[in-house]
Amino acid sequence: MTMTAGQSPPPAVRRWTVLTPLGWGTLAGSVVLYAAGFALGYPEPVVLATGALLALAAALAWTAPKPRLEVHREVTPVKVPRGDAAVAVLSVTNLGRRGLSGLRAQDRLGASQHTIDLPRLPANGVRTVSYPLPTDVRGVIPVGPLLLVRADPFGLTRRVRQYGSPATLLVRPRTVPLPVPASGKAHHLEGPTSDNAPSGTVTFHTLREYVVGDDLRHVHWRSSARTGTLMVRQLIDASLPTTTVVLDTRDLAEQAVDAAASVAVAAARAGFPVRVLTGDGPLPDAKPDADAILDRLALVQAGTAGVTEALRLARGGGALVLVTADPAEAGRVAGVRRRFDRVICIYVGTAPVAVPGVTVLPITSLDTLPLIWGTR
Image (cartoon, rainbow, N blue to C red):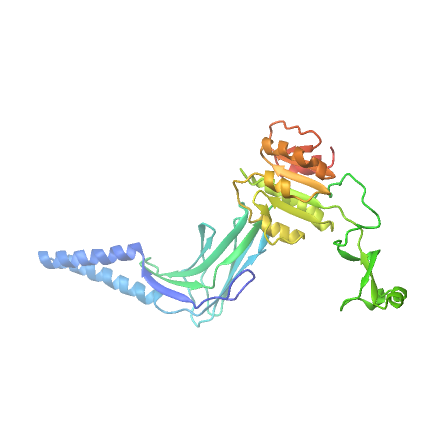
């Protein structure tokens, strides 16, 4: 089986031949008929038993030959927003000299199994089929292992071959386009005054000693001559407001994850710094870019911790966006509003919520968020 994106190197092909429940019943019935025929002295049960055993032998002979197949299954796309379409494309090539019939593909999709009856494969023929993958649940959806089953016309035996390793489909949160939330305060046009500001190419910040790897075009020769030490100009980019998104994972609703993803992705794609926190802490190993944020939010599960500790530990400045379905948690965000330039609460619910000094945006579905975002 050819490897595809999202798959591990395929193990050795496993194959086995088994009797179907009908085959086991035929075998058991033959034994009973033989015993009854000999015990009662009637030839008819023996003849019936012999016919059944011959049919069973013919079924085993049908499925015993090892077909030469090339199997390729591709999951596309390997990452998809919740609810969007994703498919598995299966291609089976018969490399043998004889045609094959009775082939059936069985592929496990998450907790369910999908079965497809393949048309007859002529010699050197190719059959390609596709089938939808489940995308209604956010998270990692295992696909496979893939089994090819060949059954005899009587349905007494089947030969099963396993190909490749399971693939994975990552179902991400849905997002809607949003503008970056305004911080509510003007920022210094000459950039931050902190030495921890990110390096850039726009604004002069300070002079410092040369280190290996610095661009020689930034050397300040007059200061270097005066101090006797090679000095370079440190350039930084102008200060950008940070967006901090806090997601309440208690009684987690998919709309809440989608809303948090929409806000964080909007900031990241606009080039603004963004942090995403839950009650259990920041997203593990999440880089401040849209793809990494979506990958991590796809794996977020319901938790037991509230957002009180996350709000207390969140660094101030910029905009704070709390996404919650709990009116009590929405009220707690008022205690930290002085540390941020602007505080927004996206409340997933219908109960009226009002928090002094906090912009509350009630939503019942993700599609309503762009309609009220930035209107209050």
